[in-house]
Length: 473
Image (cartoon, rainbow, N blue to C red):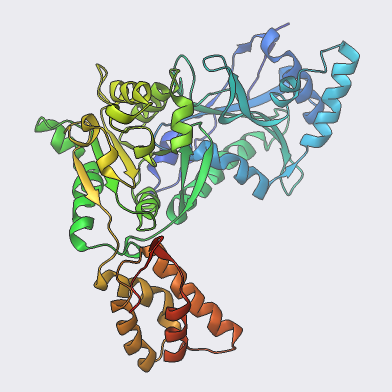
């Protein structure tokens, strides 16, 4: 039978926090549900709710909040961490109760997904389009209590990130369910929404979440721009094509400039291409999606690569980063990946425009890229070369790592060492500095002296090729 989620007659006061517009918007969208729910969908959930809250279904109290698209990815990813940090979980007890229901009602115990959709948050689902499991944003029920013992159920309806039909249909929705007979039900539900948003806001300040091509959430710690030791003119180009472009997107649209952008970051390994991605991700307040070459190849052959761009378009302005693109976007004359290349070009520059999406690809050798990629503006509008660092950048990298271990004398010799290390990548220099620090720690020294630097220069054995040692005189 259907059941009614009943609320108190008195309308609740919607809470808000100043200076957080996303929270205010979400709280304005928070509504107390007063409607009938289909019993064939929620029959099992209803039994679980009644058992956990010791409350008949007609007295259940629900607050439902649709989270606006500007923050819903961050909110979805952070929600489970927020619950774990601030509430006690009763999911294990509820799983035992669910199993007793299944035993008594002869459900099919072999269906593991049946359990997952009712207890805890499930992050895996089967995708009919490519016949495999994919990750997606949490759905399910969390049964929790606060430090006062008040019981609350957090219900998140299923919402797939990448689907064969559409991406992120509808807003991310959180439903909070409590015992409607308790005077604190309204207050506790709204406090949960308020505190979860405050937590998300703090995390935006300290770090950033990204989504992989499969929809799996990844955490990126905040990295400041000054950690990227490249020539000033390259930073200017990056700001021109990415950060400032996003800030002035509305102006460019009015001027008739295409709102999508493509950027190729090329150069030898170890010179900051991945670091640049982390910096852009943690400093530019737009959704960020990342795909490795392996993930990209898995996406080809089905509509999922298009789903990636559809999802990014939903949250535009947004950024898609594709790593090691020279592996699968090679020139057609000697590549066996022409199908992958054609499909990618059709998605990035087909009939449907990717308005507000900035695509960044990284590669070690830009000369391997097909002409339709590297020499086609409005697909990819600029190539920025991250070459091995020049003397000034080499010195900056070493000083940045070794600052607190250097005396005036050793600092002067480090200048000479930087001159002798021409041809090393940024990663080589960082490893060289780390070895010096390790030697100081092993020797019980607080500073690095000239002897240690000279010894490490002689023993540092990385090579630019099989027959030539880089930089050592």
